[in-house]
Amino acid sequence: MTPTTVMILYIALLICLILCSGFFSGSETALTAASRARIHALVSQGNPRAKTVAKLHGRMERVISTILLGNTALNSATAALMTLVMDQYVGHSGMAFWIATIAATSVLFIFAEVMPKTFAINNADRCALLASPPLWLLVRLAYPITKVTQLIVNGLLRLFGVQVAATPGTEERLEELRGAIDLHSESTEEIREANAMLHSILDLDDVPVSDIMVHRRNMVMIEASQPAAEIVREVLASPHTRIPLWRDEPDNIIGVLHAKALLRALEANAWQVDGLDIESLAAKPWFIPDSTSLLAQLEAFRKRREHFAIVVDEYGALMGIVTLEDILEEIVGDIADEHDVSVEGVHPEEDGSYLVDGSVTLRDLNREFGWRLPDEEASTVAGLVLHEARQIPMPGQVFVFYGFRFEILERQRNQVKRLRLTPVNPEADGTEQNGNGEVTVLLAGPKGDRQRRESH
Image (cartoon, rainbow, N blue to C red):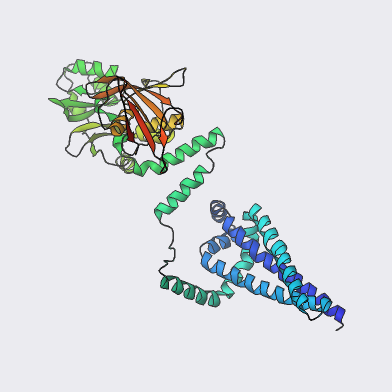
């Protein structure tokens, strides 16, 4: 062959090597950036290429080893071939080596790394689907080499005390899912509402029923020893269809009366109240501990086909009631019907503050206004103030923490009944920020005395 023909073959081979190197680089980026959710959807639709991508995702260690092996071999061959080409033009000299090094680096960097990776990251799913068949074949062919390489790498890492990452556990997968939901938190209103619902579903297993139950102070109960006519009047006056019955003392719940059962009994008795045995109409009460998670209680409601449970503490004392509707509202927000009684717990003011009942839950406030008041240690606004202040506050006291000013407006015995919440600017309100990100809270008493404590 003539020197010209040899040179043409060298250049053609050089182009092939660069293209193959670009394929490996782009494939790695595409597989890493491809949406696992969309690939899973395509797999469920029977897409064969998506199934191959899913198999590659499940063997990423072997995939990465194969790609690195192929890229290393191709880049070395490209540099060697580039040196031969430069020798033909420059001659056997040190200059040929440096020119070949600079040329090979530039060409590989632009055409085998940046360009294919940029294209792949902008078309990740499509590129992953296109590259999956040949890449899967190469992974299988290179398995003996990559297996030995992985054993050597794992052994060396263990020698230095480095543990090889295992498959992500439940917590890691949940955090990944939360992160994926948060990525779209600044989207349209519809997506934000969907995000809030998805977060609520993920939180069901972490929230006890005591956080959402109707407290015993707000429960509607009927004394079973009353005359039947009086019980019927109380049932008709109540907006609820299920009402607990108690005897002797409110803690002694003896049954749950359903309005429909009462109506059936009245019809069977010719609509006469006299002679009705109310207790026999009541269903057996279902008691649950206050520490039960919402997810567990939702499953229990489904299994028992019941919608109503009575919450008790560890000593068996009545705490409140929880219904299936309460759990559903925790997911989708308030569900109101024509019989619901609207209880105004939050009143926005023109100055930007909010008049809030102490019994309003932190989760409702966070959901409604997008706030981030912590609800790990307390479930209500009043409980948060008590936890942070470490005292039972007096009307007129002011507490500043978590970016809000809490002014106590009303207290009944030891219960905080009403507060004024005002979002504050920490710098303008006299709070201080330390190096650990904790805010120094200024507590003002009714007589103007001030003291400092650190928020938790």
